[in-house]
Image 1: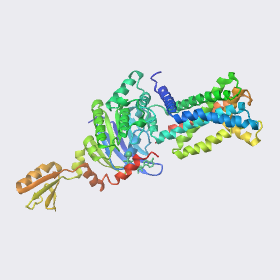
Image 2: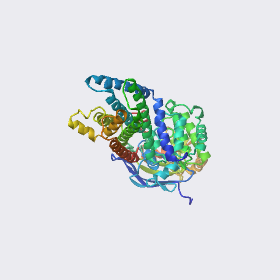
Image 3: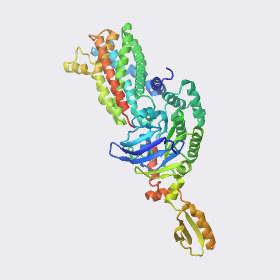
Image 4: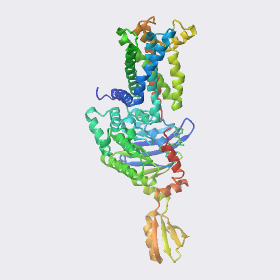
Length: 247
Length: 320
Ligand SMILES: Nc1ncnc2c1ncn2[C@@H]1O[C@H](COP(=O)(O)OP(=O)(O)OP(=O)(O)O)[C@@H](O)[C@H]1O
Ligand SMILES: [Mg+2]
């Protein structure tokens, strides 16, 4: 076990994400501070127009997980630019293990951030269902995994910094804002509801919201199934594309 | 002689997606334990060849076999057998030297019982053991190259690929790097395939050289063979006599009051000298032996250093 190369590869790829996170003061600070901003604007700011913290908190959790994990996926572009990708690509291990390790790193990051955001949310007065915390972790992990997969898949194909902007602005941001993260399907117009329904993230977010607040969804198991399916799909696709990378 | 070559390349071609023919059908073999060098100017196709041999790129045509394993069909198996130092850095600068090596050790399946020992060993070999806990971003160019060298050989590969291992380094550091390379070669009896466009280094270090330009191998052999095959030694004589051509002399030229004699066969250069000393009244005599530089000039009609400084700067500064 200890000397199994594939497991070691998953482990070091994960560890590398963690080390890099712990050494990046900017990202650490952003991680701490950004959710406060989100909670104030989306949570407290929207209260006047009928929004409530319980609805918004899962949205913020999901948004944060999607953004931070997409970034972890897209970081392949950085590795390519700074050359380290060559070291990964010529190693005698499957590229799947590199992808899985990186994904696990991103999920861990998203969960740590999630705990912090949840803590802040409670501090701001959100009432959550403590029994739902474990399933909430599960849904948050799935959301994160899907986002990493999308980031990885795109950055395996596109190779420069410009593509980073494209992936971020044209894919990740719309996926966040056209999901059930901040769109209340009970009041939104039909076409918008339709869009949220074809967005796989919505199912993860619905599951997350139901776990934490007991509202908003018909069937958590259905949500779980749909998001899991997309996670598997995205992971397979990203591994395939990662395997095809040439430098 | 019958031992199978460790590298066998046949009619290798690479066409990039944008249509550039970077490698236009090259063939060569490398023997076990040999230091083999690719010598060629910018854009010759050296890096492209290395990338194909190290499984980073797929060849468009042709075959490459390393230690009996096909590079394209069994890339996974090849990867375990090779160590690589790329032309452009391949380190994670946010990790320490130790962490970079630990990452490598685990990917290459060095068992936990030997891992730390081996990391220490290679760090010591390249003289970085005292700063192993330092972030790589704080390293100088030479230190980074040494770290990559240590990493490249830590899993005891059968063959080490070094793509311009001394590019962009100052003379002292370059000498230091060669010292390490020669030491590795001696200690671990490793086969080494390197590329360079420093003539003197190629001549000094490589047992066999292929001169490559525009994707083709122009000539291959030991440095001496290459020189002898395409260049002629020149004897410069100061004398009042008129020197006549003989069977060992290719031509005779007068320049600035001195006579320049081109020798037909470099091996006979001493014979020609004694001939001249006997026949004529010689005031001064000197010989200039041709170098690889001359070989290159003869083969391509251009100096390998043409347009070099500018292009190199661009590459080094290319952090985008
Ligand atoms: N990814 C790429 N796409 C298209 N063309 C490329 C690519 N990489 C290299 N080339 C072209 O292929 C040719 C050979 O490049 P290569 O990098 O192999 O040369 P080299 O001998 O290593 O040169 P140098 O001494 O500058 O490192 C050059 O004309 C180069 O412009
Ligand atoms: Mg090169």
